[in-house]
Image (cartoon, rainbow, N blue to C red; front, side, top):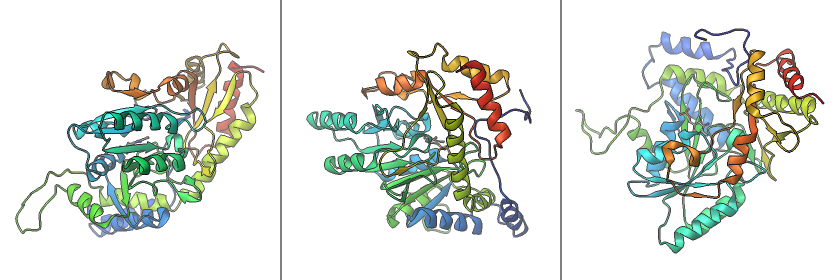
Length: 381
Ligand SMILES: *Cc1c(COP(=O)(O)O)cnc(C)c1O
């Protein structure tokens, strides 16, 4: 299908509000259409205010933010970076950009995020080998907070700095504090499918002023302070456009509403589908954690139902409903063949049994009913 299909229920389409256009209009009227201008400043301030971070840097993708963040943590050729296996490839690709290698860590069954026990195994193993990992990336998959208390304690004990990939977790909290504000560097994505979007975009947050200034310079080709173009360091073209930052400002004002709606969607599916044979919901919130429920996910248990996630996906397709398997673990990706992994059975099982349902915050009850009815048609009580 080439063009937008208006009858189709998409997994997580963009959902704009009323104010994005005002910021865009103003930027065009005032000729602030380059990657510099008041919308960029405003968007960064909005993210600082929301997360409590002291510095924010608007970038053209979340992946770019991870790349710059890892470089700030000193990751370079030959280094190892600890990273969950159960995540989107964008978490790990920047490790490779920097000439380092990932070391993958399995999930635990409750939050589906990094297992603190497997992490301890990896840290102890690397200590025995005298190979100190340069950084640790934590991910809050589907918006679900990982077990931050245990993981941050381990990172501290072993002296490994943490990059927090909160690309899917804007608006989620842990012990009352916004996710993205726990790592030495935090990262958000404003890609088209995320809870808020600038069509494409990312944000790096940190409390370290020197790091923020460095990342800012690197994101704009690392130009030295000179009238001519002078460069001492390697840079990138990673800055966000001031136009797109205007969309971001409009979107930030909607965040509380969007989180509320996504949580309602998850609860609605649970209410209507929980109890069907072999079907369960996840991931679950850890103590102190509150998820934005970016995507509503289901698991099917082969011991209790013969229906597979792929059968369910194809069935939903016949109703013009988009759904998607859970993230395929990175240790199973051909791209990362041979990369070390600690554990792996938990996230492999989740991948085999799971599926994401349409979760866009613009969904109406009629839309939700269409999905739930289609699920019930295939998996009768
Ligand atoms: C979306 C996403 C990213 C990357 O963000 P982009 O803005 O698409 O580059 C990184 N990590 C996770 C977990 C994501 O879901």
